[in-house]
Length: 141
Image (cartoon, rainbow, N blue to C red; front, side, top):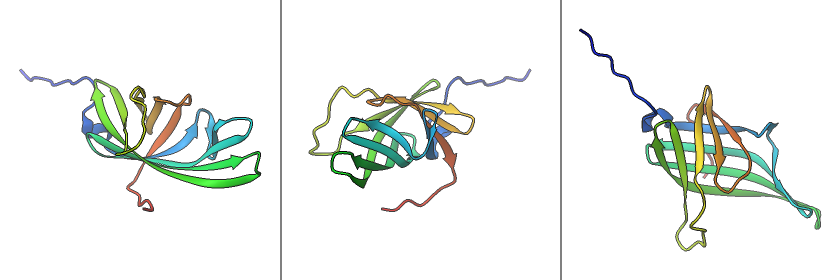
């Protein structure tokens, strides 16, 4: 008699890789991420690197348009996340940098595997972000 092993959920190794943002909700990049009557922030690029089963790094480039001053500037950010997988649920918890003022009640981002990458919702954002898994890439430091 042959035994068959079946597992539910994801192992941390199932999600290791590099992911490139391709859509914010239904909009391709660059896409409006948030706006007020005086400010528009557009996502130009966003990459997630999940190189270990417990840690992810996000690299994001925004275009910030100040409608009052008539200026446009790029804003670069680098954020670290703790990764937790429970069953098929992937949670990304923001790691507050040392000496930064961070809210303790930020909900985690929740990632779901898709056929070609990840769909991320939650946290402090109101958008659904769609990432494609990509080959290893070199990011500027």
